[in-house]
Amino acid sequence: MIMDCAIYQDGRRTDGPADFSDALDEARKSGDAFLWIGLHEPTEREFDLVRHEFGLHPLAIEDALRAHQRPKLEVYDDSLFAVLKPVVYESSSDTVSTDELMVFIGDSFVVTVRHGDSAPLADVRSRLEADPQILAHGPTAVLYAISDAVVDHYIDVAGELQVDLEELETEVFAPSGGDSSNTAASIYTFKRQVLEFRRATGPLTAPMTRLAGAGVPFVHQEAQPFFRDVADHLTRVNEQVEGLDRLLSDILSAHLAQMGVRQNDDMRKISAWAAMAAVPTMVAGIYGMNFDHMPELHWTWTYPAVVLFMALAVFGLHRQFKRRGWL
Image (cartoon, rainbow, N blue to C red; front, side, top):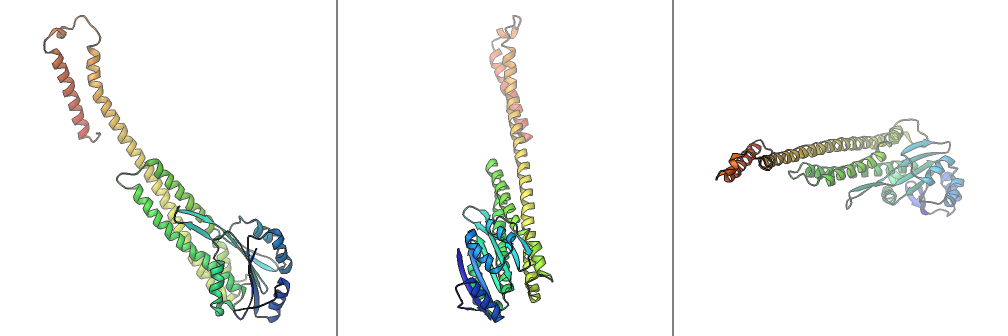
């Protein structure tokens, strides 16, 4: 559906015709105005109206309708098409999910298409309308403001993931060690969240670098330093995400090593108790073989002597294993 439609002249919102074609013609005639249309999960029929009026490329229309695209930047004859993936972090479940945001800019128009509810378009539009000096730079200012808002939120999400990772690290290296199966599952789940985040931030590097350079149609050269700033922030996010991924791999390796050491400790304890049980079992086995010529069977103190021997042997083994740290 159409969420908002407005003409902006000299950075200020003005009332214009309700028809897209008339509004676009009016913006182009003034020379210093542009039309900004915001769409939320439009149907193919709804988008046909926009496509015919703005002359958008069929491939870009297909991407905008189907979503599930990687962040990218495409240049067509009559428009520039950018795909960004805003990230949503659910603190209650510690999960990361992504939505999609498409931006078309061309001669005196901006068309934004969002899939999902996390795209910061309403906040961006309000912030730009409150600062006409920036909005007066036209569609380029809108593309920059959207990119900057998305990347700035990446920084916030990366910080929250860093806090969660520190908590997970404390849990893994706690003296008790926690439940091994739950800890391993938590590490793997966290790694999946980082991978989802990485899919949004990594591919966006090339488009931001391209926008920061010269020769991109429909983008003013004066905006290049601002896109370079966004690209720098994105580089910092990517480095932080890469660091999170490496640290998670190290934590998982350390946890598996801990599990191996713990299993070795358990095996040593089992072996020690088995060795202590083997002594009385061996002695009892000898006296259970029913030989005829065992003169000590007829001695008065044979039974207490044998029991005492077994107790002393077990006690000696226990002391030895305790000293070696097996028990």
